[in-house]
Image 1 (cartoon, helix red, strand yellow):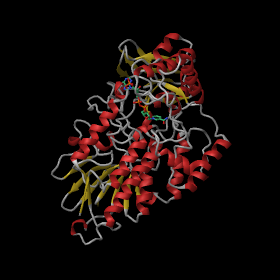
Image 2 (cartoon, rainbow, N blue to C red):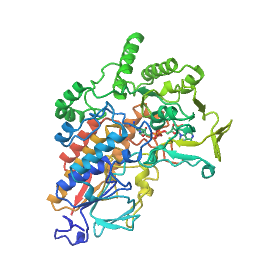
Image 3 (cartoon, rainbow, N blue to C red):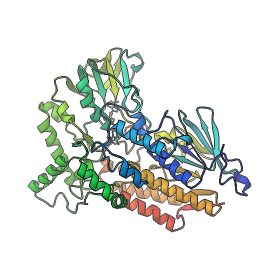
Image 4 (cartoon, protein in one colour):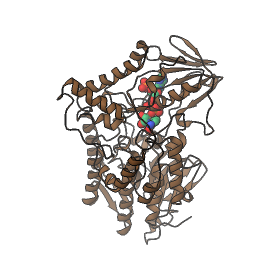
Length: 548
Ligand code: NAP
């Protein structure tokens, strides 16, 4: 065990710390940067990682067609200029294997693996206020004590396990997209069923259709998907982007989604003629990408009438792509405004329904009742299947943290504190849980921003906070209940001023039966959020209590 910087002080209370900081979820993009940053401060750190290697979301999600929906030149670390200059992304959007290769490269280049204990799940984290220590216990019978604990557990890391009756009797193979076998799956010539048409389903369906003898897609809710327009990396684009990297990365901090290069729109969709509007949508459709499309006008996420124009544009595209108009109508979303559920980027998704070996099944009107020994049965019919793919999503944003027994001795557990939904100050800390940080917790832009930039911003904030504490010989930081309450109110007010709450999305927890429905991400924009975090520091850690 390495000694603790805090334990090395005269304070008797922290003498038995093993390390300064425990990181939970050390192998993901956030965990790795935390290790880099905290080690850079000379702090001793131990990280635990459930996977057998680094990669986080890109380690687990290996389903066919998995790739990032943010341009690869953006979706990458910004902290090391040499790294971003030297790394070559072969395509506009990184594939899962390519991103995993990149994350591995970062772990090796900065020698970070040595701090991570792989194949280890943290089961509990208990804070003792007398010794000022978190005791973190793992499923490998490990126990480690540290004054600080950081949850880098990810927002989409707890796959929603299928709980359909009869699943245990299914004689074929079944898979969850978020837990895809590392050795790959050969679906060639099989009768395959896929349940779920979110990003994971939509990305994998064209690939599975190309392999399977027949693919049945069981769709409950149609989603809006836009063409990704993926292509090989353009050499000139790469050169220009890299030359502009320092400026672009800085500028990204001041944008709504943490991505620079998209001029902010200044017009309402209702200010222009129908022809002009369609020309703008058409241009964006051809360019590909979700931010560019959402930036067609300045009110697509705040004004329902404005959004209706964009939603209808996409529905028309679906109708003109899918030959069978009954199928097209089923695929055309009517349940929520475009963009209020995570917008999907696809390659040949709607075109796939023109294949003879693909059948769309509406399980909204006739829900899936059970998995049978040889397939599945809906309220209307039975389907014979050799393999089932569950693209049923995740217990998003709170699932991973609530799977751990987090508590302060003598106080409520996190489960109890969040029984009516997650409550945080800035998505960074929780009142009543001292010295416990989160990376991109609920109440921060998190999933509504470029996640690597979000992870870097949170990590930098935490690193600076720890440095501040250490330099003043302080050992405790905690969000006040008042600051947390005000932030929770603000997060809700901001969400309520948009169209987001109109969708039954995982942003709200609506995909998990019984989960309290609270809009979890902060949608006031990455720029204003970062400004607020910086102001809090400039005002002497406003809303936090710091003490010895
Ligand atoms: P998701 O968006 O939550 O989609 C889950 C799908 O499963 C939905 O279509 C849902 O239908 C369906 N479903 C769940 N339970 C069902 C049931 N009992 N019967 C029928 N259908 C059921 O999950 P996801 O596709 O894994 O994506 C989650 C998030 O991960 C994305 O929104 C995105 O943020 C991220 N992601 C990103 C990428 C990327 O970067 N390209 C790729 C994959 C995932 P309902 O809508 O009716 O509930």
